[in-house]
Amino acid sequence: MRFTALLLLAALAGALVVAQDATAGPAQPTEDPASLQSDAPQETTIAAQTSAAAQEPTTKQRKNLLESVIEKGRSDLKDVIAREKKKVDERIQKAKDGLKKILDPSSFFP
Image 1 (cartoon, rainbow, N blue to C red):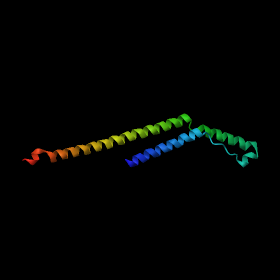
Image 2: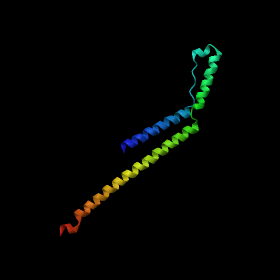
Image 3: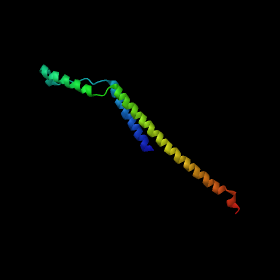
Image 4: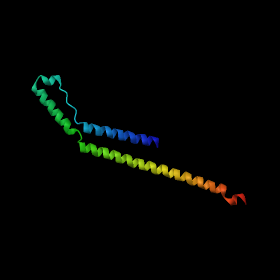
């Protein structure tokens, strides 16, 4: 259970990092010294930046990813809780059965 909880926390932390990156906005491009020498390399740099920006996931896509990770974490957590609850219930029932055997009056008087 501890491993699952740590895994869930790691997934949530990763999702928060992705969400933080989405709210921070795009990074400021740094200018390459070679692009300052002529206009032609600068145009290819702008084209490369435009194509790179087109490949980045949108805020909506990141939000959907975050929501799916959180939902998966909730689902896994519910499964873990259900399994542990079942184990606890079984142990309680075994303890009750053991006490009934010990305290059964017929066991004292055969």
